[in-house]
Image (cartoon, rainbow, N blue to C red; front, side, top):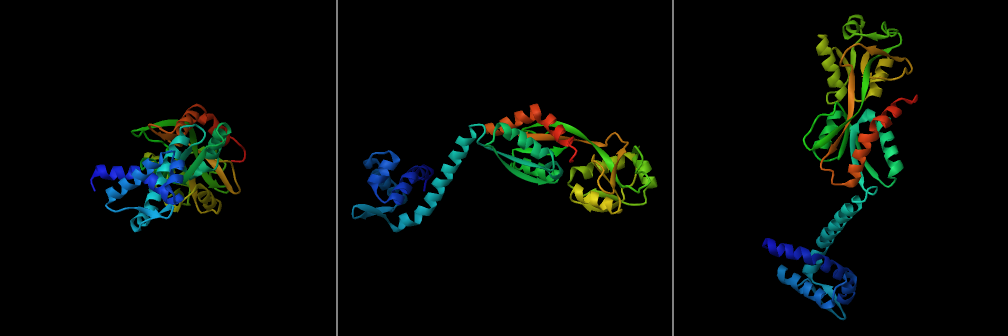
Amino acid sequence: MRPAEFRAVVRLLPVFVVVAEVGQVTTAAAVLGMPQPTVSRALARLGELLGTPVVERDGRGIALTAAGRALLPFAQEGVGALERGVDVVTRSRVVGHGTVSLSFQTLLGETVVPALIRRFRDRFPGVRFELAQGSRQKALDDFEAGRCAVALVASPPSLPGASTTVLYDEPLVVAVHRSHPVAGAGSVSVERLAAVASDELIVLKTGFGLRGRVEEIYADAGVPLRVGFEAEDVHTARGLVGAGLGVAILPAFTPEGDVVPVGLDHPQALRTIGALVRHPAHDPTVAAFEEFVTRSGRSVALAALSRPSR
């Protein structure tokens, strides 16, 4: 079938689907808002293009031929998909009725992501969020593959076709057991930590942004990285520290159980958290979320991080 003929078939499928579902040309014409002869000609033309009739008379109504019965489920699926696509576009043109697909590093889901969503939905309660979380690399992969419109990550890179908004800088600290020799110090250098620590370093697995930053700090200080455990989240790393199995470099936190933070004396002992938004943001809801993050994201994130519950 030539491309022009195929396009003609596609244009006639909505008529065919309605006729097949109601079983009468007259009723279908009323549903479609078309003259009855126009509907009849459309069915005849569809049969000509396909090389076989798709309907036949059955008393006062019509019935599908074998070809029509074979075509119907595919026609319904195609027309239904188009209707859903049109609905998505139509709804998303009205800010507040669209969807924001958001991928983020897992730790940000504890405070920052919920705070941003809550504040945005205070203004647009009808907005839906599709959430995905994991390592920094996963969030970036989701963004570059088009699986999300917004990514919240540490050290957000400059990517073509995307805008970057810095939300805040988060200091890194050394998490140690309260009985550790440096537990009472105000801050400690990497060199001193390596000199006094007989235990090993607990790090996140490769792919997590924090792992890369720790490797950079140790390399800059010329200190070997003695990895004892690789965790997949900060909470597990803290738990291992609390069990006396090592020390870890983590985002700042309040003392918890047997784990206490000690300042890390190094110029790279912080990480920048930011938002990437894909451009052009055809969806007005995504554009509105970008504007919100640009104007209010920093204050909302810092307020969430300052709460004692963290």
